[in-house]
Image 1 (spheres, rainbow, N blue to C red):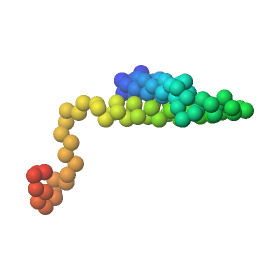
Image 2 (image 1 turned 180 degrees about the vertical axis):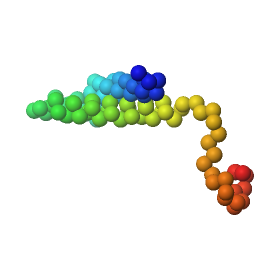
Image 3 (image 1 turned 120 degrees about the vertical axis):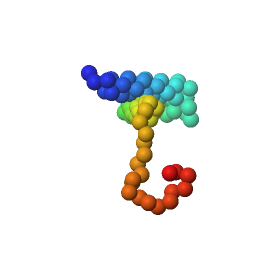
Length: 92
């Protein structure tokens, strides 16, 4: 498997695990009466599934984004047009 795919997969798995843990803590601690609402619900499985799925999706995406944004980059990132002769002040 390519290195970058493995890198993204590791960060995705880490984020998914954090999302599941956060959703579990939200239910366990009865945050904003969430546990009470789920207990009183006739079919709580849909709500529980959505809570876990969207937390996992959010934290997985954030974890992948943080992983990509913190990759080391050795090259110079100069996106300016070399033919542009305008004075850009201290940027040049």
